[in-house]
Length: 616
Image 1 (tube, helix red, strand yellow):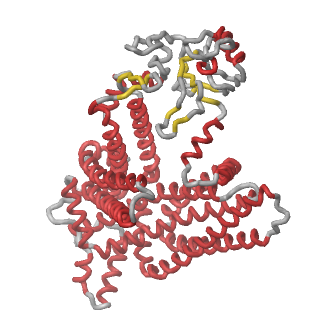
Image 2 (image 1 turned 60 degrees about the vertical axis):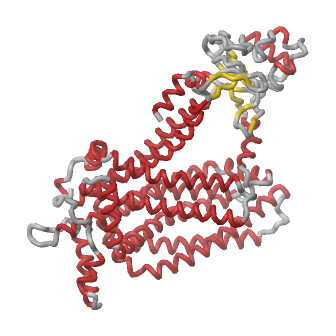
Image 3 (image 1 turned 180 degrees about the vertical axis):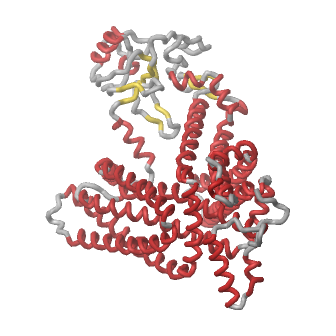
């Protein structure tokens, strides 16, 4: 990827991307060399630093570019120019000719070629794009057609306009609710940290009450709006009211089904609550001693954003690199020939691999910090910065481990994305059998990716504990997960379910607040898109925060298994585990003995890492 970026910059793509170039291959803002057989090339544009399009609103949706002649100009027209006389005055006063180079400013109003060589009237007011020296229309209404073409699932443009107007009208409410979801997520993390013992019961009660309350409010609003008289509504607002009523009915039915399913799950898993309380208590202590774990999603997101910016910039470089060739209209385009034209394929692979690599580094960092905490008997002797110590070990010893783990995920993700692309291209053309096979393959690859993600995360934990390579760690992690299948199912299922309830609580609270606030705008706002945006953002924020807690829970389980392998509680071989977790294990053993299963069954259920591994 470094070679791809260096090649694109070395071939002049960086200057063409940043400074821009006209339709004759001249880079704006500098003196250019003459291109063979290309008219108007080799011009001195030292004083012309901006790219101006004669018809900026003429968009080619298929090739994703502007179908317009581009010129280098000295300044962008800040005000609308309605006639050729205005264009001529602008050129004479600013020294910025907006018509073709073959036409002098004095000929703008007299030459019969002006209609072809001059910009389309009226010339919209424009301003240069920061850092990229392109004159872009200030009023983006001319791009409405392009925006509507992107949203292919909307067949009625009036529906699209109402949705967009609803978002614009409710933008303050949307921003406020997004901020509310962030605050609720942080509050929930504080609750997890300090009152982990009662957290499970609090979440259970709040989610049940929230589901019942949200469902009741939705049905109440639906009944209220349905009984409201339609005669008093003006015709322009009647369609909006009908859309809101239909949306409320869908929301109410969905909430009812969700509430029923939630009650059934609660009844089935109520006996596992004690196990979750013990595990959450230990995880809460981890966050008390390692509070900076909460901020790991921010650093990971920051690293991902930096990489994505680099990746997009390199992709833009690739789009403007290559040799100058003449198209059918006689204008210049830059294209790469030969094997190098396929570089962007590897660039896409690099996007997936390095993104997964950054996420894997986060998992390894969290695993290393939690392992350090668990296997330190006296928590007062913890390193000053366990997280930085974990990052140091990652960089010095385990970069190959996370690179290999992320590459395995990439090998599964790429075929799935290819199949999804084929499925989207063949939509409506393939027969029922082909459609079923494609969807089955996509589903199987998705399931395989999720399983490998989970196995990779446990392999990183095994690496942090035993300092073994990726393959050995993955094998050890797989063995312990299989041999302790019941315990894994109990801990991970119940723990993940309770964290899922936390996400549901945040989404329901934010969505309920959104319903109450948007209810005051029901006469002129369509609810659908604003509410969807708010709920999606709330779920993403809650997922980023609680995913760290989920990682801590998984790491603690493997540490617990290693602890029982090398220690039995006797003098000199004391357990590292927390007393609360040990009390739960003892209570479980007593309960199983009373049930007639004895200690042998418990030994089969709970087995640590494979022999030969040494603790960190």
